[in-house]
Image (tube, rainbow, N blue to C red; front, side):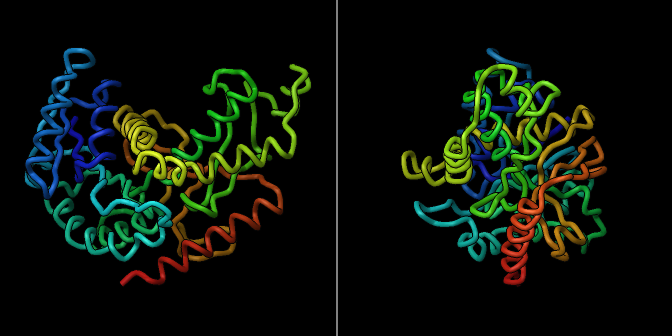
Length: 312
């Protein structure tokens, strides 16, 4: 099973490395406008294969996407320190206008996974281009808040002193400043977080929640300030999305895809919990959340919808 990655910068290359380390797929093709960079990244990652799983990793052109099951779209300009994801919109729209048709020409049957920020808007843009080619929306998805959800679960697990795989929590909405942490749905090992806290003699105060919220919501800004870019977390998130698709795991992930209406906002693309299979998106998870969380989700959807309206 072939996975194409368009864009061999930090995110694309790290996603490829994560795929190799986890043994996902059989072949990875890196494509970049900077061909020397793509070849260097592919060679470097391929040299890790003896320590991981037997995958073929190589650089190529768009024609090498033929037969790919998944294409990760990671091309675009980088987020600058202090720059919001939405400010990237106009710069990255030009990149997508040139790249997406090339992907569709050579890999029309592939599921496209968008990673470029602002990911909600760029996923909406990609789906629009794909729809013009007759490709179903369910085969175009963005990484959404997959990483934000992982951050939320990781921070909760640290506070609760438990394996993060047993923490169930979601971040929905925009992958950005208006995202919504769904505290009302947090569960641990099959019980509500409140029951877990009582059983363990622990507590999560409002101040604790505020600190966790800040660390989840502002994570990218803090990381970019310290090291100029974020890539390990999102690389692992992209690898997980590919794993679910290639292995037909029918898992629930907080990805983003176009939706007819979310929280009263029509024609918008933001992250919600969706059921993913080898066919792409096959269903959504109904959310029973509080009125305040619903209001915040509506606000987040409105922000993304306003950005979508700026698309050419």
